[in-house]
Image 1 (cartoon, helix red, strand yellow):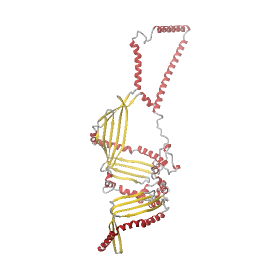
Image 2 (tube, one colour; image 1 turned 90 degrees about the vertical axis):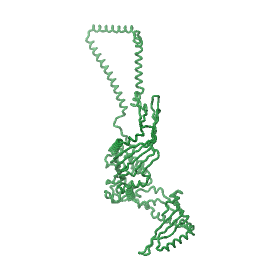
Image 3 (cartoon, rainbow, N blue to C red; image 1 turned 60 degrees about the vertical axis):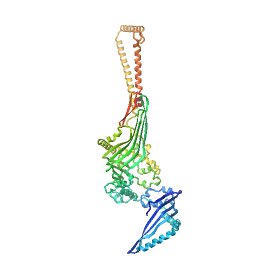
Length: 637
């Protein structure tokens, strides 16, 4: 077939009505060659070529397709895992298929002939005969072809389609194959590999799940992961063949952040405005894969291995445009630049363990095919405690994601200014590309990779995955209520090992301490007073009556003397003998001291200023935070 690059109109499955699809094609030039082999005897064969060349060829077809929506949505995934079952199962949901219109026409027949005859004379005669016929009756032939297609051919095709549907009516072979009764979960080896490859890894090798997924997986394995002539994944060549895929560009804005800080400045409250925007993301050298092994079954039936090396030979480069604005009352800083990062020889290895419920996958209805929660719910959640924490034993878990290895040989950053007001932004690029900067960045990423692959991170991932599995079962409509386990909302909240709030504990300790001191002082006072009274009473008991009368007389004379002194003298503030400066200055100093005490505790005692140095440009944001007794008490409560 020639002329596939001359389409002037192409409509495929354009809806004309609720169940009618319109298909139309218009080609400027259309040519078709058909080879026909004719056998005159076992020793004598002849191959003829039928050539047809048309100009302004057009064809249209209207198809009435009535599908029972309920029947289609009730079909189960298990019915489609075997390629031979797909068509019979789909036919059970089709009520009617009919071609309601079929036509074809052409403007001019440029060529019609048969070539390949042994005799050149016969070939020329046939060709000239057909050309003569179509030169005279070309229009009638075109009309006759269109009429024949719509009346005769269309009826024959409709009858064949009807017989085909009847032959498959009700025959959806969805019975479950014979599985190992002890195997409750999907074996990835039998699901994704060929029978021989699955048997080599210890699986049954009997394709219990059909060959559809294994065929698809092997196709992608051969077209993506298989090494090419250079020993690298063939996916590199396919990416290189498609120029647009070597560089992935996202021209839109993907980060747009703005924030206003209100702070107390020298002349009152000031505002500092920040704005950060990132756009025009770009990833280059996508064809730098060193290895690409994804979803590789292992000897463990529930574990898939994933290994990838990128940035091999050519570093993977990621870049985006960054806009930074900081506007204060004193100055405005604007930096518009392109930030880039290059990663070389990045190796990552991830192990995925998932126990997919075999029965649930086979009975998965198509109506929930677009519900992600239902696909997640294929993995039953493990038994969790009242806090929603799953078991630590890997044999009791149903899902596990473990980043086993992550390494990188070189990391470098670069900055290229488009419009920068900071003076040192222009020279920042040279600083980032020095050997010391590259070594520091690489070391930082290696440290980060060690943290990512640590047991704490894997434990956190397991905790989040267990919660998501539990939530998914509650959100999937085709899972019965009696199959659902404790939803995430009913888990008990994990409490901190500290008892109570720190501020309340500190307040309690403070008041208990004050109360204890007060009790101690009062208790000591009354104890001392009691002891003095006891001593005094003991002293009086040892005296005679005359001695007691003498002491009483002396005590009365002392009190009379003190009373006389008080009547004859004045207080310091009223005494004429004390200078006025001293008389009124001492109370003033006392009240001033009290005022200074209150002022120092009620107002801001200290403040935090935030200096910002960006690209050599200095800015100061004053009083971002203040310390005072009032604020401390407020924070404490």
